[in-house]
Amino acid sequence: MAREFEGRTALVTGASKNMGRAIALSFAERGGNVGIVVKSSREEAEKVAEEARAFGVKAAVATGDIGIYADCERMVGEVGGTLGPIDTLVNNAALRPREAFMDITVEKWNTIISSNLSSVFYLSRLVLPGMAERGFGRIISIGGPDGVRGMALRAHNVTAKSGLIGLTKAMAVEFGDKGVTANVVVPGVMNTVHDNKEDYPEIHRIIAALPEYHKRSEIAVPRPGESQEVADAVMFFASKKAGYMTSQTLYVAGGLFGLP
Image (tube, rainbow, N blue to C red):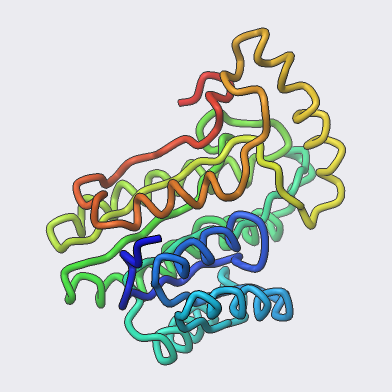
């Protein structure tokens, strides 16, 4: 595979498994250095870093809470200090609890908004000045269908993910003349492993029902998506080929429920 990202550095949040891991390794396979940011699963993250280094690139692991600005500042400093200036930011990590609207506490609301939306502002604010100064940058965020369609039991995440699209559009407009693009990739029903065990029954029911959704024309491709398919979309947005694509929301969702 062509090493089109040679000399570049990406910071990927939530990169210890699933889509984050696929994104980090895809970037490394193309010759880019990778900063793997996780909250607590350092052992898993170090394994991904070793996999990345097998492609002949540098990789670094940083741990902390992306919902806390001071942690973001420290982690960006650690990754940049080890690997060099960050020119690609992939905001993948997010919390996705299921709670009835009236069961969402103020504390939980603030936690989800901080982790799923404010974190993108924090990290972008830290890397954008350098990107603008160098005349090149890519900010790619992973959204969700609930941020476009709305969904019961996830008011906090719906709010964060819809806000993510708005924030991306604002950054795209403000930094477009400085060589920086900002885009969102929205996965559909994914064949991934979730830490939230309570979601397993729901996810398995949805996956099992995909053929029926297909019959009702609610999804065009009646199967779950794979992490690599999302990673491939992210790689396109990260490439120089996508220099004229910004402020976009790309759905890697099999035509789920008529999105967008």
